[in-house]
Amino acid sequence: MKLEIYADVLCPWCYIGKRRLMAALAEHTAPDRVEVVWRGYELAPEEGRIPGPTAAEAMAGWWGEQAPTRIARIRSLGAAEGLELNLHLARPVNTFDAHRLVKLAADRGRADQMMELLLHAYHTEGLNVADARVLQRLGREAGLDAGEVHAVLDGDDYADKVRADRRRAAEHGVTGVPSLVIDGRPPVSGVQPVADLQVLLRRGQTGSHSVPATPGRSG
Image 1 (cartoon, helix red, strand yellow):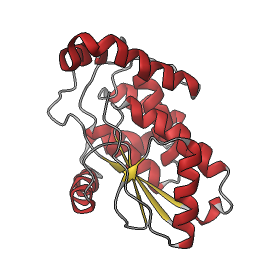
Image 2 (image 1 turned 30 degrees about the horizontal axis):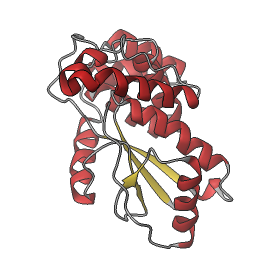
Image 3 (image 1 turned 180 degrees about the vertical axis):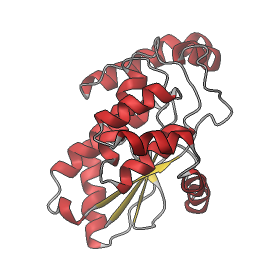
């Protein structure tokens, strides 16, 4: 079974969804028969490399007086999964290079570790995940070769693959993150309860079709 996860580092729902999905996979009857593929889906490709307002400030602009309640809910759901989502520290930036680094990590069998480190760096530590120095450190922590990380960040390796992910998302009908595509079927939300994700995985294993669910939105 091929499980494609469309996600972006900037999305707190993606961090929550990752925790839940990993928990569901841990209980799966045949986890070694599930191929997990991380697909890049840039939420803010227009962002630069220099951090601006925080995610919380951006959310205040989107939601107005509802922002505190929504932010509190995101933080509460994150805490339930053991995550510290510091939206007052996280500052949106361009994630193209971060996605390229995940592609390198995937080629070295370290994609999950790389995504975990990127999500933690952004949402918990409030680090600039567009900064090459930050990405180089995270790449080393993920077990990647420092020289390879430097070469990727200094060039344009994997850029075509990140752009191809966006085209693939459009082909599959992915419009938000986190989204799951199981064996090419219609996308479903990747931020569902663990029990529901387990049902999806069982259905995927048997080839049954599942009912699409609305993917979670960023923030």
